[in-house]
Length: 229
Ligand SMILES: C[S@@+](CC[C@H](N)C(=O)[O-])C[C@H]1O[C@@H](n2cnc3c(N)ncnc32)[C@H](O)[C@@H]1O
Image 1 (spheres, rainbow, N blue to C red):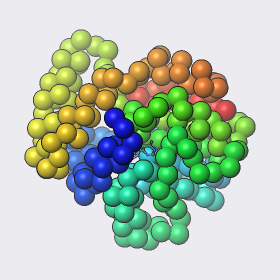
Image 2: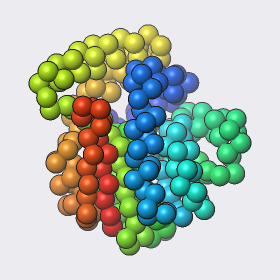
Image 3: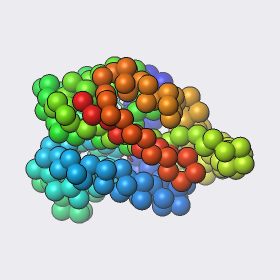
């Protein structure tokens, strides 16, 4: 999907995004986020960039690491607006800076961040390799990348239930609440098309990352990838 189209889609679903995240995942996404951010604990990152930050949930979770600086960027102004409202309600507007920005063209100097995080974002990059190489550029040497992304379960039985839920129930419920005809059909399609697991590990390696670990979550329906510059 083209970037402008992607931004329009997220602008449109932004008001219902958080609600649908919790409804469709039965709230499990919160524990996935916590686990992913906890992996950075021993790195003690002082500057963190959250790419495709959306309504800022991952950036907010990153504050548990007590960094000096957290910046979130996203191409959808609609998602960022909701994120800013959330930060204001939580009195966190001075703790996280939310900026418009594209993963493939990051508006930061090289070697600016100790850690980069991306939750449910890499799958949406128009050009995955370009996005990953831009991330590599803004990370400090020795810095860490943590990616949380949906993945397709391997077990045939789990896969059957997952397929029904994700390809039938999710688009129906998503359409009902978001009033967007395409977004929640795009979601399972983009997950199926994403090179998950070992394929994503190889792509990370090809883009310079090393020491990559991979953690499959909840029967393999999501995966955390962690790599170093
Ligand atoms: C599924 S949402 C995830 C939001 C948030 N990270 C979360 O965990 O809830 C995907 C986000 O990626 C953003 N996005 C898609 N392509 C992008 C790009 N090239 N650069 C920056 N953000 C992008 C969308 O606007 C959207 O807010």
